[in-house]
Length: 513
Image (cartoon, rainbow, N blue to C red; front, side, top):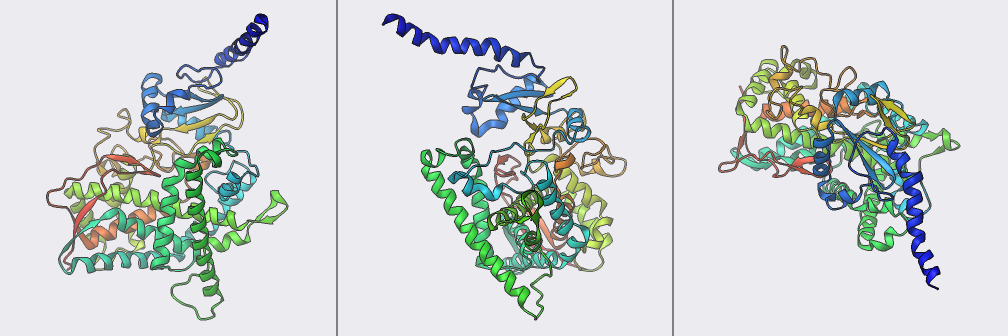
C-alpha cells in the first residue's frame, strides 16, 4: 500500500521533470527576445494577475530592464513587446506580411461564440487573409475613398452647425462653461452614424445608440474572460454574461430601427436633405464571401462591422480633439497663432471650409503635435506572427502575439527635444519634425495610426475631422480655462487614453469683423 502511495505521489513530480528536461529547456534555448523568468505551464502570467488594471505599468517595469524588446509568456504562448522604432519598422514594414495577422480565437458553437460572433468578421481583428482583404477593400473604396468622403461634406457642415448652435443657445450672448468631451463625442458619433446608415439622425434614437456603444466599449475588458473560458465562462460569471447579453440586445434593437429608417428613406421618391444616396451599410449588403461559397454577410456580422465603424472612428477622434483643445486652452499663445492663421485665410465671419484646410499649416502642426504627445492608444491592437522569422537576431515564433509601444516612440528623448512639451513648431518648416511621416512607411518616429498593412484605414478621414472641427471651433469661439480651475493633463485608460479630469472650458462667441 505504501509503495502505491509513493508511486502516485511521485508521478506528478516525474511528469514535471520530463517536461523540464525535454520541453522547457529547449524552449528556453530558442533565441526568443529576453524577458522575465518563465515557469512551466503557467508561463509568467502570475506576474500580471496581480496588476490586471495596471498591465501597462507592469510592462513598463519590465521594459526598463529589458530595453527595446521583451517576451512575456501567457501560459505557453509568448507575447512579444517591441519599443525600439527601428525594430518596429523592420517588423511592420520590411516583414509586413509575416506580422499582418491578428491573434486567432478558434470559432465554436458555444453560447459565447454566438454572442460575440459579430466580432468574428471585422476589419480590425479578422486574421490576415482573403476575408480581411475583402472587408478592408470594401471599407476603403466604398466609404473612405476621397470621392466618397466628399459626399459627406454636407453632413460635416450640419454637425458643426448643431454644435455651434447648441453652445450659442447655452451662452445666451455671454459665455458658458462647456464639458468639451461631451460636445465633441456626440458630434463625431452623429457624423459617423450618418456615414454608416446614410441618414441624419437626431434626438432620442441617436442618444440611445451612443450610450449603448459607450457602454459596450467600457465593458469589453470585463468580457475577455469569456474568450479564455468560452464554455464555462457564462456559468462562472453569470452577472457579466447577463450584462453583455443585455447590451447586445439593445444594440441590435436600435440598429434595426436605423435600418428600417434607411430603407424608408431610400424607398421614398421624394429626395430629402437628410438622406444620402450611399452609405457603409449599403456596401455591406452587397458583399459576398467567396471563401464561404459566396454567401452574404449575416445580420450579426453587418451589425458588428457597423459597430466597429462607429466606435473605431468616434472615440479615437473625439479623444484626440479633447487633448488638442486642452493644450490650445492651456497655451493661449497657440490659440492666438491658430486664430491669426485662420483669419489670414478665411475672409469675413465665414466658417472654415474644407477647401481652406490645406492652407492652414500651423493648424496641421498643432494636430500632429497632439497626436504625438497624446496618441489615442499607448499600444496598437495585437499582431500575430504567421511563421517563424528572425529579425535583428531575435526569433519571433509562429502564433506568438506581438505588440508595439506606440506612445513611447513619440516620447523618445533621443528622437524629440523636450518630448513632453507641447510644441507644434517642431512640425513647421525648419522644425525637427518637418519631414516626419505619420504613416511610418519610410521611417517611424511616431505611429498614432499604427503602421504597415494594418495601419488605420481611416487615417485621412480622421485628419480631416480633426482639422475641420478644431479650426472652426477656434475660429467661432474664444476658449479659456474656467476661473479657479487648472487644466489637468493626467491620463486615464479606457477604450482610448482619455483625460482623467474631463476638459471644462469657458467659451465665448468671438466678435467677427
